[in-house]
Image (cartoon, rainbow, N blue to C red; front, side, top):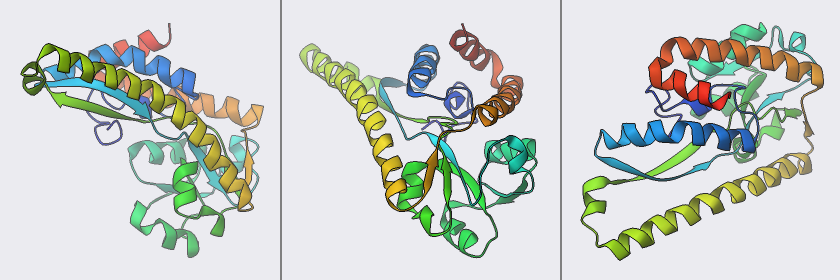
Length: 235
């Protein structure tokens, strides 16, 4: 949801790279954005039920990356404005490759680095071409589930209450399941011979600076709602 509607405020704030880099931070960002998303959906005749995260995004490469300097010159796969901007800021050679073409691009050396989740890496057998995965948790996007407000209002009160209770349960369960599942995917990459590593302190500091620039970029385009969300998150 947030990726698909990243250009529409207040959606997309959760895919700003290196803004919220852990599940607790992602939850804090969700709570900051939730009132604005509820308002936006309401204006379209919709009602928010719940949101669950996806797997965190990390960096795949075929070499050690200890600082941002090690990313200079990499053939960096980009699939949208945000990932292209990361490549620009780290000095990589940006190559636009969509998901359907990624396997071929990796096999032929068109790209030799990219950012995506361990889940996507597992599904696409990243170990066939990549050797390293850095668990940067660059962003943790979410799926949002909503319902037609008129249809909800037409339900009797007990049914409404049951639906809202189920939604709350699904949200709590979904966040817990994805935290567990994210760890499982990391283990699978390791089991297939990949080096799965946390970013070094130096790389983390460098990427934080990249995140600050990307957040500034976002604020210029986000409008009042997007700016208010980020301000609330940073309190």
